[in-house]
Length: 298
Image 1: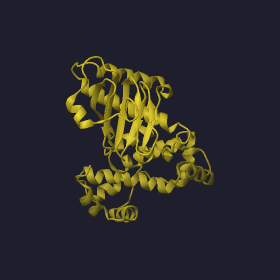
Image 2 (image 1 turned 30 degrees about the vertical axis):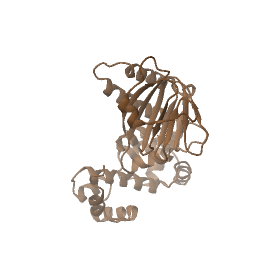
Image 3 (image 1 turned 60 degrees about the vertical axis):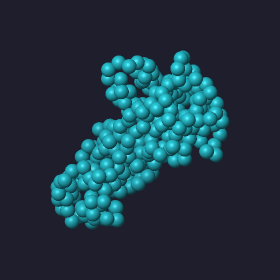
Image 4 (image 1 turned 135 degrees about the horizontal axis):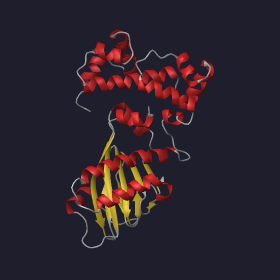
């Protein structure tokens, strides 16, 4: 099982393009910073990204920006250029004539604790220069640019799906950068033994996993496996397994009306009492109460 694909699927990660704007210099766009994760692509032309209390970041054609929630920020042709709120800019549409810049903006939805974990693994902004992109990522952006410039049927659906592709490539590219802090499970993908274990555990977290069994899958002794897993992933194998099971249980609690006994069994617990004890220890609330308080938020 592909762990990144599984994490994104469990987080219900999906993107939607909300504007493609052509602008003639001088231009500026202001964003509230309230969306959990936003992306910006300069499909044509360059500009700057301006954050409060930070030097402007130069942007060149086909650079990729990911922005997590925080203070308002701006994209502009030059530092200090007056900026138009994005809602007004969308209502006004593109400038007439041949634009100096074409800016595509999209937003991603990532749900639940898995989505929160993925967002936590990103800084306030990620900027990937066109030179850093994998060839396939650059090709995907070329396709985005092509669809953004046409009005053919299915345009929005293609833009949204290509935006999903952009997220996967952008995460992979960023987490390879020096100083990046990828999730522990992503760091583990560099270790073949740990990768085998995580693939098996993610495919069937309810199985009767034990540390000796995980060590066997990894092809290592129990002591060496536990030490390696904890160092790379950042938590012990047992804690990782519990957290994974809890995330799957959370999803079932808020998305289904399955009884607690069924959810407990699917999460790998022998009965709902053992499950409730583990869930309360993990969340501070019994699963029934947690379900009531969280249903409808996802």
